[in-house]
Length: 437
Picture 1: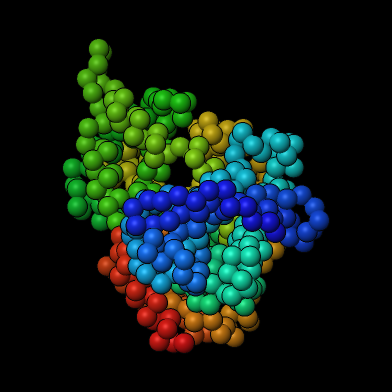
Picture 2: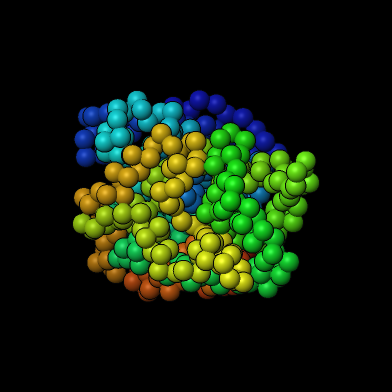
């Protein structure tokens, strides 16, 4: 591993240093192809020269680079009181050898692209972290804070390289250790239904608004700016907003002025279309769509477009059926479907690649239950009681399976509690982990 510090600069109250690391694409072949990782070191300005312990932040996703924060917002301000923080762009995201419709053709055709992307799951991410850790920390273990998918990665970390972790902190990110993707989505659709019901109870006027938009799109799908094809199903996928703290309110504001009068009738407004495009396009994070179901794959069963298949078991999510009667149109949640690789211009060239990943059966295990049961690393997890994205029951089973992990179960926050709760969430987790230690 090589570490190149490319720049050091300041923002209010902090000193930032850009790091670029060279790591193997396949850690089992250290002499083979290499890729570049990017990480941003953050330290409080008044502690710049101090020998501080490190905290590694693993972003949620998959497919999202680390937050581009300014100053000390959210949890970061609390972390900087005692840590030097590394905001890591996980491989394939942000500035870490991005994988998208523009870059993946460098690998070859769909088969080569799919094979390449098998190296972009939690197991490879953890091995990246272990490759770069000694050069940054001098060999000392670091505290790992994993948000959502970052927590999945942290569970893999405790399974495969616990010696690299001083303390493990999870926020909305305890995965099931053995569930197939089908199990994940069978548990998810009822949770999403409850989020819909809560939204419509809060904003009953949105029932008719959503029905009107869906009916319009069933008759006349709309090509959005940039070429995204907005269908009724795509409109329903705006329900991904319902899992964040203010998501229900965002969805309401989006629906309230969807139509404008035009010659000959009404049309979806340009403003509505542009906002919808921003929410639905995967141009900025295509790995989320490509690998979302693969993060649950650990056995010899393909994921086989699990969310799409399981959706058929929940007929209330059929917009045409709802409109034929007097039922509300239900929004879907954190799900990826084959039609998105036709609707989204950022995903269209990757449709065949996605299909090959969905059919793949040779996925390696991500978690080691025996090693987790013998865990010695101080660990604490925020489990959000009303989390739409990660099943609470699965989280609690995994919490019980990791020796010594202390869960904090709360309904004060939604899935984005580490941002909404800021210092309080990190304070609580550190206190729980240290009390156990």
